[in-house]
Image 1: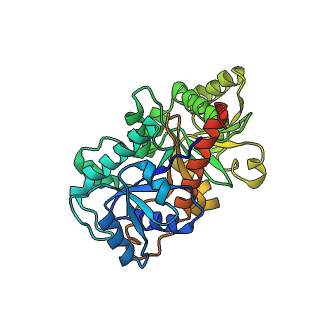
Image 2: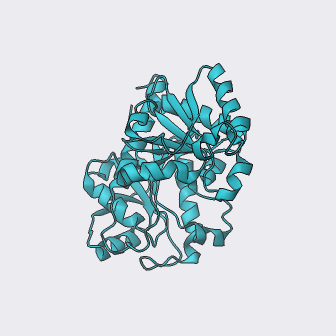
Image 3: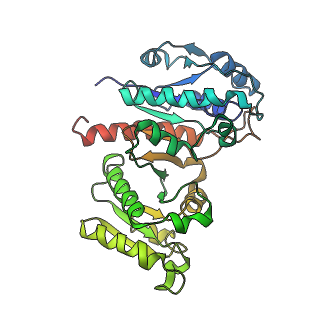
Length: 335
């Protein structure tokens, strides 16, 4: 089977996306990829950061396979305004969004194996009437309204999923319900099999409240929502445990007893994994018909243009996207 390249989106052009993508190409351990961006802009930014790189403009994703060893392939995509490192320009918002849409079209059509998204500056995109809390929800909308997006953060140390994602903490108890929890758990269970090749996944579910509610004495969400959802899915044959207290489920001994931790809100899931392995953590959107990963950090505007941005999460994101694509093929009998 012929290899397919990975599409990389530029993200916020004033951020570190250009630099970490160039560093990922220079790393020489990544599978073939191409960047959707303005070649002249990339060359200027690379030079400013003392990261000169040979560039090859390609007219199609397939051409990137021919030149990847010798040059960074770039599929031309213009930005209206040349922005300075660390200084986002609102006029570029539509081009940032369009680059994501282009990459998704390539992935849906099977021209590329996956897409890896550089970080976006959401406050800038809202100026272009961007209606989504982040990449995860936008990608789900592009893939179809019946798709339920689930954010999974992966590292060699830990896999985590937040049930609610980019939501204010005060809204979480109102958003949490049995249906959402069951959909998230089922999507995660399926992805562990197809995307991570875990035959019989073991899932550990956190509580929402301190001490997992202490049988209803510190909140009722565990009794009314989380426990019923878990019992229902246990009866469906899932290997699932919980709700457990979030303050003790991430110890080294506890992590040996599950494959993934599913938590009720964003920071409950992301604080432990970023503490354990910040630079090798990768954001994966599961439940989509396409493969998407991303470095698990932001635009780092303060580092843009310095050449000091750490590319480890980008390198890991590219490698993991390649691995997930091949795992999906193997799960369908094509491996």
